[in-house]
Image 1: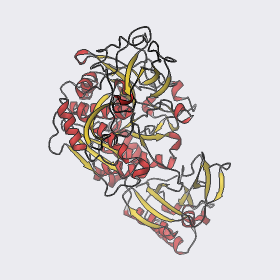
Image 2 (image 1 turned 180 degrees about the vertical axis):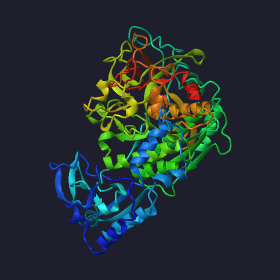
Image 3 (image 1 turned 180 degrees about the horizontal axis):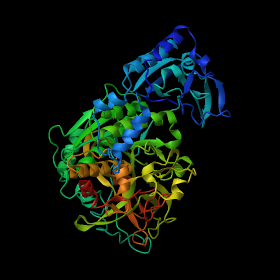
Image 4 (image 1 turned 90 degrees about the vertical axis):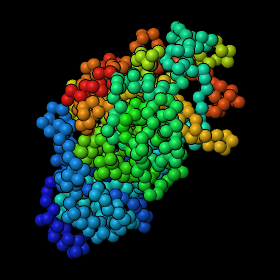
Length: 640
């Protein structure tokens, strides 16, 4: 492991001397002169899956992340400034001071660079966080003291270290980790509940304008009574009322959003949407984009599909916090390396205090080397007073999706706020009626129209949640998260997801507006209803902007300790799956072709509160966390 806080000066000559003598790093791996880089051998690289050595001439592209001056001190400071019970609470550092106190020194960068070059690797880039290198397998093996083999993973074969990588002990713990030694895809997906909006998508009616306004009187009963048609899509006015915005707008608060790529029509779409739904018009500079010079892997990542994600995130934040400024930071691709670069841009330039992230992957695809790189940027952010909010996923316990019960990542990090999902009922006059945990079971209308086939039907989607297999239980969850959940995978206790929740069910979803391509080839602005924890994350980010305004603009920072400190208070709606005790469902009518009635419509019943094996119960649960923000939530921050 990296040893933090040790001066480099005394060891640099030793390192240079050892390299000058030509001692190959790999040969020293069995001696005491190397430090292992924990987590660099992925769990799937087993002896049983081993297909033999990778060719020495194969090419490797890697990033060597720098531990900085004081890695353990960074984590300790990040915890102290985020804890309402700490004397250091809220005593954030500027980005410059954070880097000066915890970032890598010039001597560390020079020493790591020298070591990598001496092994025969080519340095292709240097940032204050990492050094990127390329080279052949032989050079990588020499540098990192491990052999690279090919391993079967699923029905494919990937390269990975045959044992944990290491770095020279003479570097004194300057290396945090290395990523890229394994070449399995490390990428994220956005979790829209719709086809990519590059092709037009429209919802069919009939609709409810608010929950229960239009009862499907000609359709069969569900749970013993007639059910309402799904809402057309809630607007900001309805969401602000549901979550207690009051007169707050998020004025003078900066929110950032990260996704891959960037919608070319976002400015027009966002302004048009705001004008149509009574949201405040964007002022000059209120919405800006920070984008990379070039995009990569656009086909593999489905770039156009990400446009809808950005549109949803931007419009949801502005609808709930119309006074907040929004900075969209687009990644060059959907791969973790590029998404990490976007997060680092926000931290390095302190571009915002609140960061919404509606993307992720399953925990089984997360390797500890990448987890370490993510946690480091989240800790740097916490020290500066920046909070990161991640959607918890849209596949419930992930069993139907992957065959294995697991959570999503980076929402599983102990250093981010994982946002779960609800089904939201806003009634007449924008009154909050109830929420359930978001989990949908779907049954189709029978051919004769007299019953629902196999009611309530199969699970389709729901809020991600559950217990991590890899992340230890953070201190702020102890005493709140039920022991049975915390110890589900490990007697010592693990991180449970999510932390807080908001509207996510597409059947009680949010209306968005976006320029889309119509069947005749024209591009036109069009609106549709959408959901997913992709919606919940920006809604909670926007509510946090309102809360930051309520505390006089003072940054909330990493919010989890404060979120859990309010547990059990009137700050939250305690969300359960069946609040009416009768069973809940809505009727939904969809165009068969996703656009118009030319190919007919499909009528279905969508049950609420049916999230795979996960249940929203009284108190903390792994669908909705501590609950959703109640009217007292925003102003509770003003009392700190």
